[in-house]
Amino acid sequence: MRRLFTNWTARNRHAKVLLVALLLLLCAPGFERAAAKEGAGAGVFLAELTDRALTQLTEPGLGDAEQKLRFRTLLNEAFDLPAIGRFVLGRYWRRADVAQRGDFLGAFEDMMMHRFLPLFSQKSGEKFDIGPIRRYKNNPNFVSVESKLRRVEGEPIQVNWRIRKIGETYKIVDIVAEGVSIAVTLRSEYVSVLKRNGGDVGALIRALREMTKGL
Image 1 (cartoon, one colour):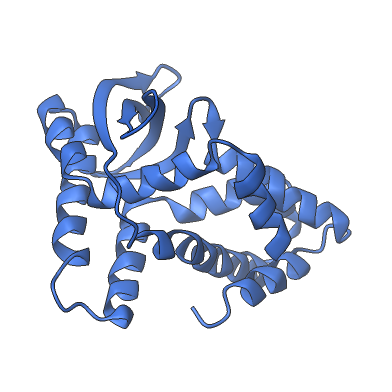
Image 2 (image 1 turned 180 degrees about the vertical axis):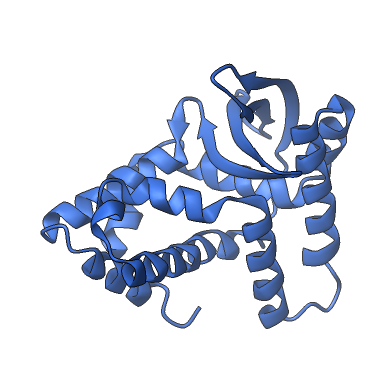
């Protein structure tokens, strides 16, 4: 499992972009100012999330334990982790019992923490320009927010935020960088692991827990 995620980052040229996209969402002031101009609900959601993250995660003297707690809270506020978790597990979600589903979602959340939190301290000069915000024709509760990642070096990269409206709130369900979906990519990786282990969801959960031990 450790090799699995290392290989994903190494072979996918957009993997770093997907990671940076999340981090910039949580710490890039240029993103918040652009999004606020849009006025749409999804844009306001992203702007307010950015503002809250800037305040909470960059507080002077913030300890590691408190930063982890705040980051986990923001991760859950920003992303529909249960929906993403069900998607990445694919058909194996239906085969898992209630206990396994709960254990997997817990392990999946820890994996997201394990993957993203260490990168939070990395400084980046990239910023986002927000483009059109469009509703899905077949489901008005889903919107697509287009943006461009302006890099210090190199051409801009297109990043698309797929957002779901749940009641009066919004949740991110996927990030797509130049056609590469983080949810689809993770699903492919997880399903590969499950196939190699005879479809045993428990084996995947144990592997995830082993990788995030000590988080």
